[in-house]
Image (cartoon, rainbow, N blue to C red; front, side, top):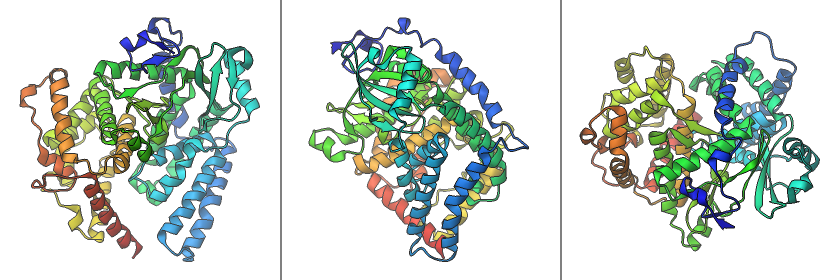
Length: 530
């Protein structure tokens, strides 16, 4: 290990197995063209089709039907002692179906696994097994991919290549290895034929999606064809590891520019990166869920969460770039308290006007500018450009005093959710990719806070983070938006309203917020169960 000059421009570990020279990385300049080509492919993959795209449709329908129909029959007979038992069984059945259907559906399960608070806990827990407990490819298949892409025998590149993977997920699996030059690495290897299968499955999903509109409960919360398009935009970028390696460089450079010293990025190898193989520096640390281990090592777990929140917000607002798939399997906490980011297949990129719209959305949330937030949502693509914003505000009752949701009955809570969803769908609302990734990350950090920092004062943290942003980035962000930074003032009443508490609340810990949520969810479940 040597002290690396590349730390002058990137947030890499203090010492590394090699030092990267951006100008000499042969695959780096390819990434923008590859990314543009992947995005251009999405409309073709998701276009509406009158005829089913091959026999794969039958396989998908048969597999999902085999998972759901027996559960539905038992549910109607009242065979489950509790609602939780029923949800546990259908969650297990759906996870099994996803694994049988392969990479595309496993990836969908991984996205669900990051949605704590958005999906039933049983479903989230079951699909967490799709992160790194997916059946692995044979070593012979792994060898074939590596040798084909690197153009050399495995033994000519690696002194050691572990046959059993460290983890196996939807698109790829990861193996520990040692280069013949002695450096310890991990090797990410794409599953054979996965690229073609994913593209075929996206066509199947786009054919099935229109039939789900109005036919299943979950479809009432979203536009299934739009969700398929959103999913396609996300997954196509993961099919070429040269884009992922370039993402690692971009995120590392961005973190360094921001002066964020709490995150580090493993170094990709300067030459051993291809479409299906990615060799990178190996880093080790505490699993993100290992609270006991971190505390015993003297790590400030509240600071770990705070660093993650600030990095996510700074990346999106200042640079328009952020890691798009935060979950426990993609984060290691190093012994010195820094967090190593892993798996850069999905990265959010807000460019030009979209970054400015996101910036206005975030500022509007802290200044309680409701119409400004709606305008920003429109400019991000969440609402049609001709939307009557005043009508949206009125229909959603955003111009009225906040009602504490814990004061509502289960019936009132369900009715309120249905009213809001119906109003949004009526205006043609959708969730743009970048906003979806950002919200998903915030949901993950919300859940992480329950484990790592349950007694953190949320209102106090928001105040401190807002002051930090104003001090470090206020002039730049104001210049970007063409506004006077001195006239931007934090309005905590709007922030408190977002948490559903009144303006007199002075402190709100995550533990207290979670208790409020559990009360609300229980009332809604009890009402639905009646």
